[in-house]
Length: 264
Image (cartoon, rainbow, N blue to C red):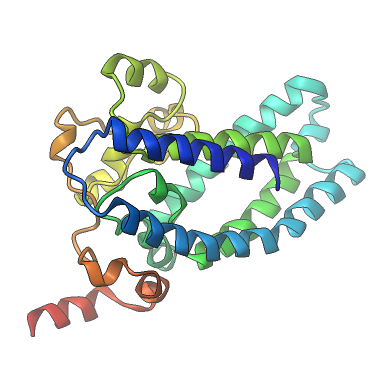
């Protein structure tokens, strides 16, 4: 297994235990069933991601071998080059995430992640396989254009997995610690707003690792009454839609059809 997989498994286990001992939302029920459903979908998406890994490795290897990419063109070697491409790749992740909310056909896939009405650390892995496929294809091109090295990308993925598992978690984090964490990285309080069923809040706080992008591009939103946030998108939230097969088929369902069904 790769470094990011090991980091993900360890952090996931720790956070899941903490969610049971120190939960932010104390009214959660059926945690095991909820987690099993999310992880079932994550397993399929993970297989798609694993199948796309050789493409990502190839794009970085070819670009590095030919001296392609921003890092080479600017003559950035060593740590300055690595840090630069890591920061720029996280900027790309912000832009890609924002596009998944703005472009209708991308949102059809991405909303599978947002229909979770009980966000916890397993939600961080709840993505449709189609979204993983498209993001892998896009990432391959961006990695080559940046001149990302394989080792740097492995480090980025390990940090990314740890951060997104944390900011999706249902762990009660002291306010002061959350604020300190949020100076540089995306904290749980910031990402809870992103998972609000209110669309103006869903369309905010797109950061993956670094919280600065939302402030720079004016997509940052905060909310003091964190316990009042209702997760989801206002539809597809009933138990039937939370089953892995229904989630897999969800991109094929239009908002209009579900509204028509509800009116019957």
